[in-house]
Image (cartoon, rainbow over the protein chains, first blue to last red):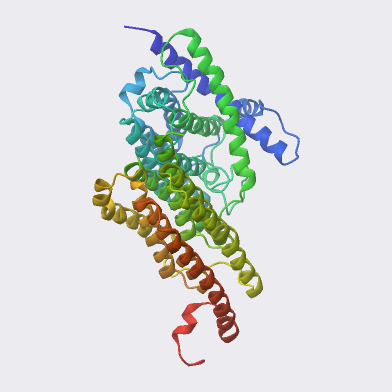
Length: 314
Length: 221
C-alpha cells in the first residue's frame, strides 16, 4: 500500500488546522484596512485561541452531556471535512469514501448539535439563536445541494476529487451553468459561514446575532474549539469553492513538487478569496432577518437556473 | 471566431438575459428595475450582433443598434424621467410574495423548455438552444405583469416580454425582416410615449399608480 496519499491527507489536515486562524486573521486585517482602522495583525486569532485554551471552563448547573460534547463534535466534523476537500491534491484516500453530500451532512451534524447545545442551557438567547440558525439552514442546505448537483452534472460525479479533476482535464469553456452555480455557492457560503448580509461575526448585539447567540454560554477550551471550528469552516468553504470552481494548481499526483506548487497556489487563491469576501462584506449591509428568505431563495433560484441551463443551453 | 465559440458566447448571453428577467421579477426598487431592463437590452443587443456575425445576416447589425439605442438608452431614460417626475421611486408592492414568484418563474422555465424541445430537435441553427430561454423570458415578463400592482412595473414587464419576443425571433429564425423590426421598434417607441401620457393622467386623477385603485368605479364607498 502506498503511504504517500495518507501522508498528504495528514498534511492537508495539519494545514487546515494551522492556516484557518491565519486566513481569518487575513480577512480581519483587510477589513480593518478597508474601514480605515488599524488592525491587530494576521496572527491575532492564534493569540485569541491560546488565551481561550488557558482559561477555565465555566459550566452552567443544568448543562447536560450535549453541551459538553458539542465542541468536540463540531471540531471533529470540521477536521474530517478537511480530509475530504481536495486542498492540495485530488488523490486522497478519504475522498474516495465520502463525496460532497457527506460533506454537507457533516456540516449539518455540526450545526444540529450546536443548535441543541444552544437550547440545552435554557437561556433565551440560546434558543433564539438556534431557532434562527435552523431557519437559515433549512433554506441554505437545499440551495447548497442544488449548486453541487449542477457541478456534478458537468463532471458526472459527486466526488469532489472527481469534480476537480474533470475541470482540470477539460477545456476551459464559458459555461452558464457553472457561472450560475458559482453565484449560488457564493451566496450560500456567506450564509453558512455567517458573514455579513446574513450574520455579523464581529458583534454580540442581542437582536441580530445568530451563531454568536447559540455559543454565548461557552467558555474556556470549549469556546476555543468552537471558535477554531468556525474559522476552519470559513477556510473550508473557501477551499471548497476553489476545488469546485477554480481547481487550477491543485496537484493530481503525490509527487513533492506539484504538492509544493499546489500549496503556493492555495495561499495565493485564499488571499484573493479573502479580498473578495471583504469586498462583498464592505459593499453590503446586514439584512433584516425576514429578508433572508429572499436572499437564500435567490441562491436556490440561481442554483436551479444553473441546473436548467445545463440542460437547455449545453 | 469559430462557430462553437460564438454559440458558446451566445448561450452565455442567453443565460444572462434569463438572469436579468428573474432579477426584474424579484427587484423591489423602481430604479433597480430600470437598470436591470437596460442590462437585458444590452445583452440582447450583443447577442443579436453575434448571431448576425455568425449567420452572415447584416441586417441584424442594424436591429442590434436599434435595440441598443432604444432599449438601453432611450426607454430607460424616459422611464427614469417619468419616475423622477411622478416621485414614485419607493419600493414596489407585489401581489404574491417574492420566493413564491421565483418558484413560479422556475416552473415557467421548465415549461418553456418542454414546449420548445421538439423545435430544438428539428432546427439546425446555432442559436436553437436559446429558444427556450427566449420563451421563458416572454413568460416571466407576463408573470411580472400579473404579480405587480404598479402601472410602471407592469409596463416594464410588457417591455421585457417584447425583449423576449425579439430574442425568440433572433434565435428561431435569425431575426425577422428588417421592415418588420423597424415597425416593431417604432411601435415600442410610440407605446412608451403613450404610456408616459397615460401615467400622468392616472397620477393626476388617482394620486397613485397603483392599479388596485382602478378596480373601483366610485371614488368612495
